[in-house]
Structure formats: structure tokens, C-alpha cells
Image (tube, rainbow, N blue to C red):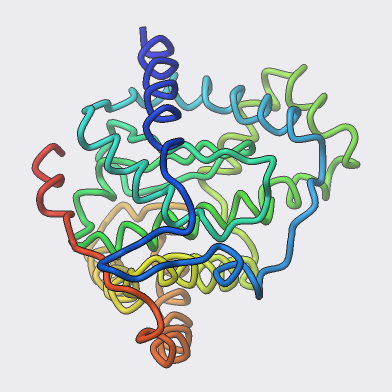
Length: 273
């Protein structure tokens, strides 16, 4: 039943979001995709795009065995609309991004090979503005675009065997999921994901400062937790990310006036959580 809902939702989103065109206009201003992507380096696929999608689907099944999918039509469409906007600068043409909500009070987000991006209800409940949401989705888009997960797997497997190792071994599937869920990327990758994620969001009119404020709130919240979250939202990594984001937003603030302003609609949709 979960998979049927997911398949139907994907089809609906493709039809809906596929109608959007570039250049995109916000409040009378136009964004040209060439301008947005002029300073972004194209990423080459580490392994075949279809193999990446297959890996992502295998991990999806593993995740759904642990967390149910949360589907509320208006909220899910909104999430995908924001994600589609933020993903415009991504130059990996082989990737189509889709965004889903997991029914869990844990605070986490995951970007799967192939472009499926998952956000927990727990994280969405802590978000207060659309710019904060755009920043979260932006960092996951970058993680998928730059293939961080696959690059870390390469340490144990040559490129051509990554997909086969995961596809053919159920134990490896479980291990890979836990690795993606609980471990961190390198400092360089974390910094790059936050910087580019905020940059992508800014190009559509979102405010990088808001994402920094989210990191600050999550850091304070984590400092009070007896059971700390793992992955990119644990206490130590949040401490690192909030410090680095201060540097990033100072640089991005110099260019904010170049971009249109987008309306903050998050409160309207947060009620569905």
C-alpha cells in the first residue's frame, strides 16, 4: 500500500511540477537558468545513473521497513514545489529530485542515490520558515548531486562493484542504510553542502540567514537532549555547521539584493504536520 501511494504521488508530482518553466518569475523578477548555473561545476556520475536509482530504491525499501511514509497531499506537493525551486541550479541532468516525509519524530533528513530526498516530521516540526526548509532541502540536493554517499562507499569497493555489492547482499543493504543514517560526511563535504545548499536556495529568493538560525536552534535543542541524534544533526556536527554557516551567510548577504524575494508560506502548511 505504501508503495502504491508513493508511485501515485510521484506521477502526480511529475505532472504538476513538470509544467513549471524556466526562466522563473518571482514578484515581477526573472531568473534565467544560465545565470543561476554560471559558476557551478557539472558533476559526472560515479556509476551509471540507472544503477544509482536502483540503489536508491533498495535503500528506500529498507527505510520504509523502519519508518512509515507520511503523506498529506497539500503538504507533500508544497515540499516538492520548494524542492523543485531549490534544485534548479543542480546540473546533474540524470537526476530527477523527489521529496518525501517520513512519519518519525526523530530529527533527520536523507538524500538517496538517484534523487529521492527524505525529511522526517520531527525535523519539519522544528522548521519555522520556508527559507529554513529550502536550506535543508538544498543541503540534501547537494549531497545527492556531489554523490557523497557513493564516494564514501568507494573506500571499500571499486566504482563498478558498488551497485552489485549493494543490490545482491541484504546484509550490505542494512549496513549501507545505517551508514547513511548514522554517519557523517567529511568536514569538507558538510561545508560544501551547506554553502551550495544555501546558495541554491538564495537564487530562488530564500534567505540564507534563516537556515543559519535553524542550525542555531537545533544546536541549542541538542544540548538539552539525553539521547542525541546521529548523523548530520548531532551536537558536535551542528556546532561545526553553525560556526561555518556564520562565515557563509556573511558572504552570501553581499549578493542578496540581486535576487527576488519569495513569500514565506511555511506556517500555512505546517499545520498539516
